[in-house]
Amino acid sequence: MEKNNNIASKGLEVPAEVDHDEVGGQEEGLEVIGVGLPRTGTMSTATALSTLLNTKPENIFHGMQITRLSEDQLEFWPRAYRGETTDLEWRLFFRNHKAALDLPAILFYKDLMRVFPNAKIILTLRDPLLWYKSWHNSIAISLDIVTKAPYKWFVKHDPKVNPG
Image 1 (tube, rainbow, N blue to C red):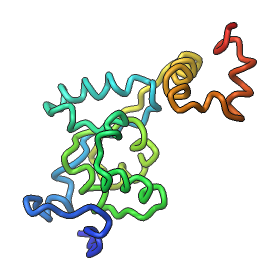
Image 2 (image 1 turned 90 degrees about the horizontal axis):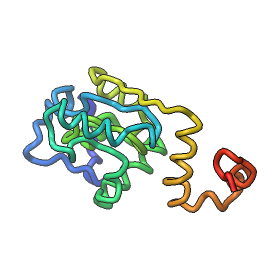
Image 3 (image 1 turned 120 degrees about the vertical axis):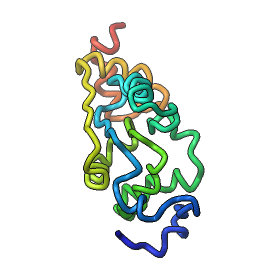
C-alpha cells in the first residue's frame, strides 16, 4: 500500500472508521468512471447509475456537486491538476462514491482508471452541433465567456449559434 504521512496536511485525513487495508485496495471507491463532456447526458447518467448501483444520488460524483464541497475537498482539484495527489488521496477522495462523471473528474480519467482499475468506463456522446448549442446556452453564458476572445469571435458570426 502506498504510504503518505502528509495526507492530513493536505486536507484529507483518514477517518478512524476507514479500514486502511480497504482504502489501499480496491474494495471501496469507484465502480464507474464517466468520461463524457458536460452536456452529453452526464446528469441523466448519474441518476441512472444511482439506481443501477443501488446507491444514494450523493454517492455519484457529478460536477454539479462542486458547489457543495468543503474547502478541503475543493483544494483537492487544483492539487490534482498540478500532479500533487497520490493514489491513496484519490481513493480517500472517492471512498464514498460509486461513480464519477462530469468536470472536474473527467480531466483526470487516466488517474482514475489507474487507481480504480476494475471500474467500468462510460463515454457519453452528443451530436457536436447540439452539444455546442447546449454548452453555449448554459455553461458558457453562466461563466460569461461568450463575451471574451476568442470565443466571442465565433459566436458573433456563427448563424448556427447566433441566428439573429
